[in-house]
Length: 398
Image (tube, rainbow, N blue to C red; front, side, top):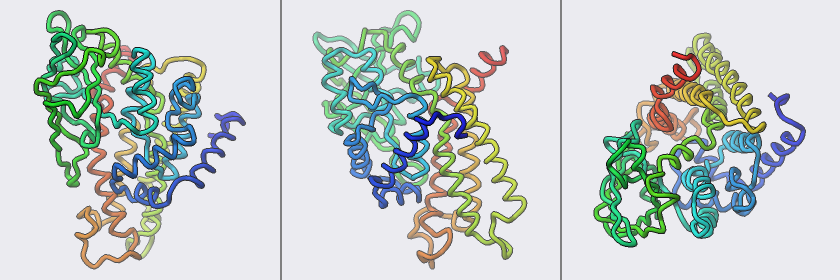
């Protein structure tokens, strides 16, 4: 793959690797490697390290405090970070809201919120999905009625990732009920400490509240928290969802997952031999690795197009669909590789385990947790069914 990168990009990759060696705390990378849940403080710690280096917002222009990286540089950073098991940069403030404010926000909103995203003062969450509005987001019903210098918000959002940590939420709300559904949506910034907001956790199979329900009961939001123009929120929502589409495939995460899978398969013994020497299992690993190499090549082609100023189109759907399938296949093979350890995911639930056991109870716990948690890849960011429809219409002409 090196032939796809210029000498400058290869030098940048070396710089990123050196930075990760010097600044990534081993206790954090170990938790990521074992696929253990990071605390809010640990996520904020890594964000602060990146911000100090000027690398927290690689996708932002330098005028807003970002790194101003090219699409290829952003790809390199994400790939190297995943391979080094660095905590991922949470997308809500950096990759989602930030670009929207830079393009559509007022000067006051930019000056107020962008620095707070970088310095960690604000933790943002996303208020898009509702119980009756997931893939069909335009059918959302959470309302915002103008009352003087405020909007009064009522309704419910769901699947709000890490909403229990957030102090701000960017929301799509309905400000008009006539006309096409897409034409009556606005984009509001809401302080989570405002009276009338209730956050309720949704417990996942692994016992963690990664996602939440958020209820709004007569929540008063200042008019100046409206982004852009009233009833134009659908335009901003589409911009947010299509921003950074060149990295939708998750190549870095898949590469890191494949590396872990091979290491586990080398350590796990089946019928007196390492599992990786089992012809059937080795063939399965080879198949997913070949698919990953092909997807990575396609991803690099799109990165080259982005570097030339072209906007990714339906090809992003191909990457999203294939990336989902590959990551879920790696999760499934890893779960199979750990064998009986996969019967449970809390390490304390495995009796007789010791720290020298390969793959070890902690790693087995992470393998099972990742397998269960990443079933969501088929849904979020555009469901697999929606991606297939886009491919059929825009690429195959069906």
